[in-house]
Image 1 (cartoon, rainbow, N blue to C red):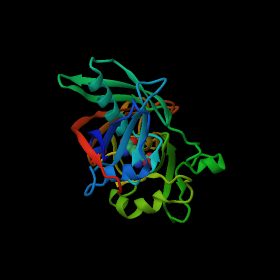
Image 2 (image 1 turned 90 degrees about the horizontal axis):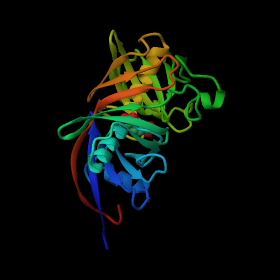
Image 3 (image 1 turned 90 degrees about the vertical axis):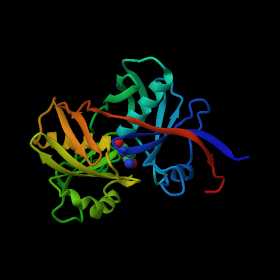
Length: 283
Ligand SMILES: N[C@@H](CCC[C@H](N)C(=O)O)C(=O)O
């Protein structure tokens, strides 16, 4: 018997996801199935798959699968998609919901129009400079505007939003394609890393993100948070004010407190389609 499953497709600024509601069964997908679902020619096509599983504390637990089958601790655009899916299918208009993620239980405030959720404001938790998935995991010392080993003249700041990021301030955005994959696999990061190429503007940032496990994407929520945190840390942007972060897919709003304790991310979200897929037995 071939397996069939109802799937939902969402995006946040063109960063697109297949959403699977597995709260009844509690069974997650494997790496092979996430690769097939993300495949843009032979599968459904997406940057990642979001499995929604049962949670004791929140409305659901979100597991993020990258296009290469790896699992990410967190995904900012994905979390907005999960909120829209959950709230629009729940009925009612809750003011605030909580979702369990690899970066902890996160509070999300949906914004509505007549059709349902159109944007979400998320308390993303701390931007960490010392974390096991950063170079600081080995040294105990924050890696801030530090020279990147084996890349002469290149400096970066390593920030964990649950998932790892290497932020290159004032680095040409067009370099993302050439350098992204090399830096994703840099040996200083034990679990690979996302890489942000950032231009600091007078009123915000322009950012291109090379994402771990999927390459260049239209937008990355955790990447926007990590970039804003690095720019604030460098004294290049103010704290406690909404900052514009422009990505290829559009703008996010990010707010960074001076102690980096809880980064806020606000941005739009859209449903694309829903349907039933037949999962091929051998992929
Ligand atoms: N696009 C996401 C991040 C998805 C996970 C990332 N590729 C990783 O492996 O950490 C976002 O919006 O944050």
